[in-house]
Image (cartoon, rainbow, N blue to C red; front, side, top):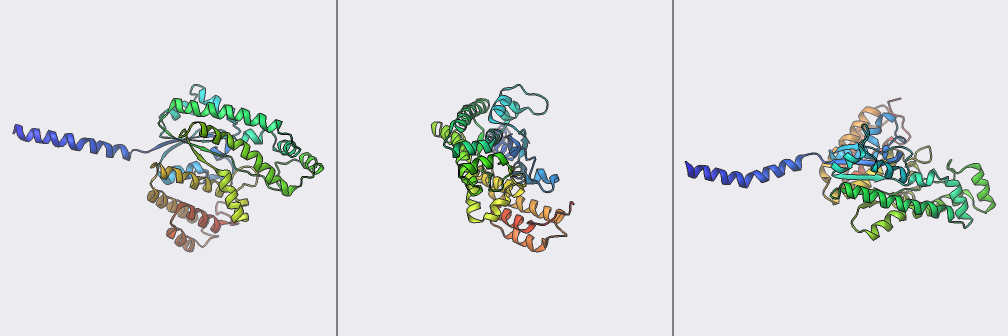
Length: 333
């Protein structure tokens, strides 16, 4: 009898850690999203009721089965995010606590460092060869990014940390370039077809702040370069590239958000925080559900469903879904 008990105890000692480890792996991964209106997902959704399914934070959360919390705030500059991270938790926002307990921390910031500084004035001054204004913005952004990274790493050094870079939303008809700015630019011999190139230079200067920090602190975080990805898609398919920007000429459209989610997905899978097969299966299910619920009257759902089910990647699902609903009015209306 005593011998049997000893054998059972030895078996338990061998098996229990494996069982507990398996249970731990089955727990949901916690991810917190921080940043500005892009991260908050307040614009670009069509219809707006699809925010949780179309904004990149929701797409990533749902298809990967994460426990996801969004504490981004519209209008935030890098200085605002840094301030909030250092504040004591207030109400439901709880940025500090969520960062401390997260498995993944995702930050999308710096867009308002540019846009709220008057992008028209920035383009005009740099076109004239005066980099004083943009250099001031870059210097401030560098200080704030360093503060944000160091604060998050101090709170939670073990979390997977992702920083998403700013994309360039400027095209020749952009409403972000005021009539005065256009007139000033024309006097300098700069015309609408030059706006995007000049804006791209400004965006690159701001994004370089993040790259520079990572060069000095290798492994501190992962970068999702949305400027590079948006420009790649625009070069390959101009119509699709422009469709990734919402009609307000600033925020990403639903498709833009999906592209962001797909870019982030690559990092999550490469680092072992996401299962590719599960994510793809869940994503297919999510998009097919949306087709049935929102586009049953305007889209050949049966045909599109077949295409989606044959897709080999989340990126492919995104392309199929948004090509199918292009210019289609959702049943929501």
